[in-house]
Length: 400
Ligand code: 3PG
Image 1: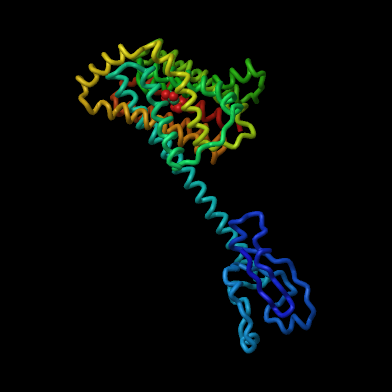
Image 2: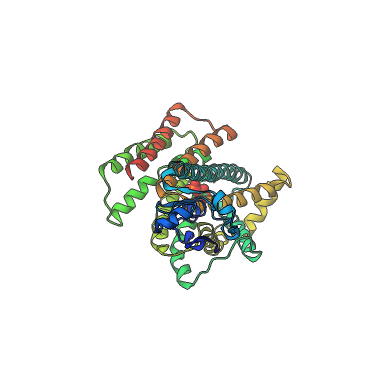
């Protein structure tokens, strides 16, 4: 876009206005450098040119024309231009703009978080309903990855989403991430097939403890003392919740613990592998789903297999009815959606904000699943969960 204004011998080129750092602001307010001009021009020009000029809009510059008589009567730049000594309103405007853009960003993050938690709650409810009627966690885990892969392949094919540009190196670095994602996903689903959803998530709130221990003993990282101290309520709270859990099951407990460990490795590999890569959060998660699906499918067939699935499926349909298939569809689709939104929100927020959001997500899942499934909870059990959750908040703060 190019527009110019001629003031006697002074020329202001509109295209100059656009060479600003912030395109959003440059569209609204462009600051011109002081223009040198002789007194003669200062007198003849209606606009004083000895001071910096602020132009709040350049939209009609291109159509400005000089007409002899009007020159003296009207300001040439009545179109929202004025002098620097009246800059206060502009500063206020800039402040207002910044406040508005910050509010818009906060609103956007709020929408991401609310969507992420809501999708996660729906996934957890349908996942448990499916597992209660059809206890084949390896197949349901595979179906969730398959649904996500299919959704994204269709989105890329129909250009709803732009397909990522990847190479062999990308898939090679993604492999360990996908392996850890697969193990963490199956382990969590196995856990939920054996114990209450709330219990799995209480144990999963202990993930920061695994993160610190792995970073310290395997990667040799050190942390400030408050980080180590925050592990006391996390480990203590999880332990208290575990020993007072009415429906304790060792496979369920170990599944959640393995999931924690696997997800810590997923995060470590993910950080190492993605340095300098420019794949969006949404596409990154899509590729992760596809690779995890390829890894998981043969294992699911080996561990459970089509024969067991066929018998289990008939039993589930006879107990629940034909709409059971919609439960399976819901758990699969919502698994992909909540993960996709969480990866998309990672593009917008810091890891710290993300980890606080993840803790809040666990609270919403724990509370809603207890209400929906009428999970019996003893006060001491609830206290353990609350201490563990508090610990994860303290951990987030200590890691800042
Ligand atoms: C899974 O099935 O992968 C787990 O439910 C994931 O749990 P998280 O995303 O809440 O850690």
